[in-house]
Image 1 (spheres, rainbow, N blue to C red):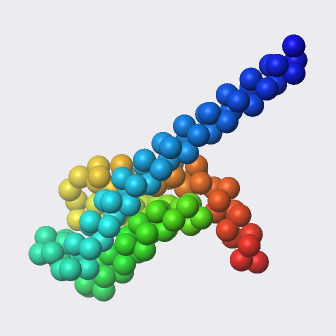
Image 2: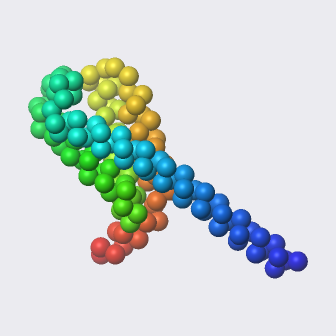
Length: 138
């Protein structure tokens, strides 16, 4: 009887892990799409984003830096081995975006908060992959 329960628990745990993996992939693909779109808009010099970075007051180099970080992070999100690392990178970018909206430019930080939460969930869900990747680099 105990053996049957143990086998059932393993099977249930395996299906739960598969569901979590699928949900994380959905979040990763959605976030990667958003970051690729916005990152390329920043890099291409969309007028609205040029104005936003003028309002920040640190120069357009910051627009190029954040656009590059967003594109690189999005690509990393789509590679299974580096997905957690990409999420961590994007958590940092979005934390900066939230702070910038709240303290400097105003406006609603809602989208930045949503992306911060999504990338935070992915970073947490993929933490073992990130630890494995960083462990191999030593």
